[in-house]
Image 1 (cartoon, rainbow, N blue to C red):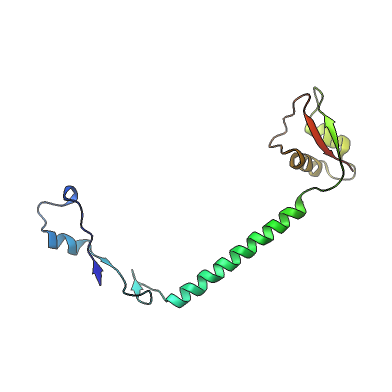
Image 2: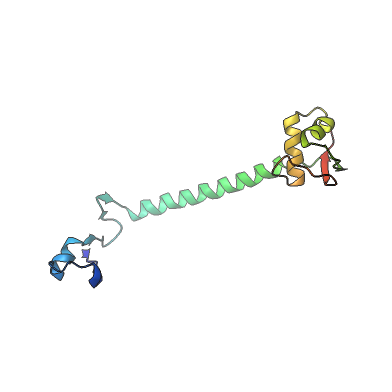
Length: 131
């Protein structure tokens, strides 16, 4: 079965009759999904099974990501610190890092304070993780 696409008059060729134009731009349309579509055989049941598995896998990955994210957030003791002129995030991290790496301490400080950069302003209050 074919479906003819009829173009508006502005897109039609004056030299080409309507019937000939419809034959030129006819598109194959399957009667059911178990027929061929553009040279590819599609089975409706297989398509449903694949889509169901993709849906289940996507849901499982989303749950795994949420669980992983919840374990990654810092939940240890913190102290509040008011930034002085000249303080940097890295200086504060080196001062309060304890046995953590400097990079980990900076990452925790960014997470706790919702920082997207290292820029600090004098008078800004920060939560700093304690060792």
